[in-house]
Length: 236
Image (cartoon, rainbow, N blue to C red):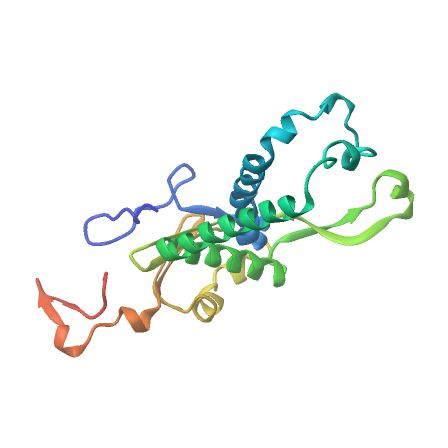
């Protein structure tokens, strides 16, 4: 992640339409961790199975394979025990990669958690425009299915650098403007952080939160004063 660009005096640079503001939070991020987990583990799982069964798969006449005879043509001649072992090995490899990820990239995973939590917060509180999903195909004459779809999701960007979370919110004067202008009341307990800055710009609100403030505080013996400034927290 990129650090927040600063002007002299510590004031953030005004966000613009084309400036980097972080990762955009979208409605689909409510399942962000699951989606990325499947996206990363599925290729590994398939490649592992391919390594076990490559010779058999090359011998299959794929021109004759269809949904009805898949089991008879593809799985025919495959030892059940060998297949189960290959699946177990593939799952173990995927699990091992997951353990390595959690061990070496804990901060990246925490950022994914934050983005997912913010997306769910917006959807749970209906701070976005929803429309009724209509049935299609054979059942289109039955009317509305009752399932809501997101028509417009607020434009919110997230980034975290050195323990500081920055949220940039686009203000469009819609009916959810008040809630988006008071996000700190939800973000602080939800992400276990404290508000350190809130700036208003034309069309934007920029929030800065100190993540895990208890761990960021330094002891009284470590407090230093330099250039007229007293350091009370790490990274700040």
